[in-house]
Length: 109
Image (cartoon, rainbow, N blue to C red):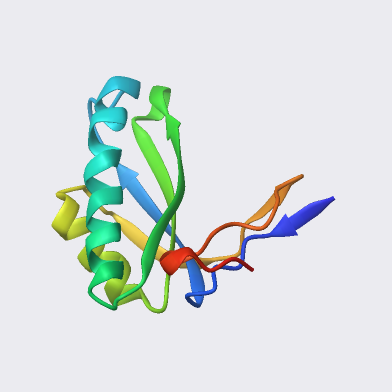
């Protein structure tokens, strides 16, 4: 059964990245920057979390799920991490068999 991802921080956003030349190695090198910036922003009282990303190598596209209170935090997170963003939209994610996720600040739902 599908279970919704509901970060305690508020909402989930989908970040669309049309990223020419991206491959698995390049994405793996970039995600630690995104996660480090999310941790720094959360420690500063502005909770945001990288929930996960999906690479579509043939299309040179990356989709990332970000938990945050509002879109401005998601935009800032990506700017601080130096990652491309083409679109950010509020999203509802249903993932089969998932247990509850940890939200920013270590809270779980």
